[in-house]
Image (cartoon, rainbow, N blue to C red):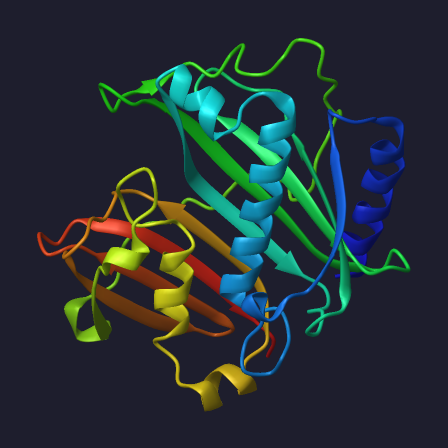
Amino acid sequence: METNVRFAETVKEQVKEITPPSILKQTLPLYPCFCGADKCLSLVGAFSLVLAGAAMHCELIGTGCEEMKAARRFWLMTRARIRFFRRPSMMEPVRLTTWPGAPRHYTCDRYYTLEGEDGSPMAEARNEWAVLDIDSGRPVRTEGIYDPALSFLSTGVLTEPFLRQRDILTREETVAHYRVQPSDIDFGKHMNHTVYPRIISDSFDVREQLATQVEEIEVQYLTPCYEGEELTILRRREGNLYLFSIRNAEGKTAFLATVRVAE
């Protein structure tokens, strides 16, 4: 963890050199909706918080909902990783910083840091996004998605390659079932990406959640889920890692997650 914190410090120096609108810096209280039973930032809250940061920044740089809709485009998260250093408590001020990475052919990365008012690191996150054509549902090239006037940092956070996750769980490792609710559906007409971490979190009861300290989570979104679908949640523990799979009624893998917890 010390190495990661030092790396966060090097990113801070680069962040100082980038000016709005290429980067968003926002300080906000950790509202109750982002917290769990221990009154601290929850796993679901962390995903919601970084999504809020991405949405706010996209509105500033011309890739928000209305601009994408006019271009018949839609953002789709494909992978995400969050590493925790310290989970802030309810109503504690949190400094959220986010910036996009230079786009590749078909995907874009976005980076985030969460800090206390004193600059102490709370968490780092990285998302990988694709852009879909609304009419065909097919991915489109992301080159040129951003205004050429934007500046890009030469690096980000959590830049090591994403895990090569595979669904290796068996039916005997089923821990829960879930029917996709109307309130789970976002404007893309499929289950919002923040619901998946809530579903796997809910495979633990409150007592287990309070006794478990998540240090890092990495997820991969594979197949969209829709209202009324019956999902199966599978879980396996390997040392200080939990492996999760969510499958639809056809047995197709919709979501994978690897969660590292404190030993």
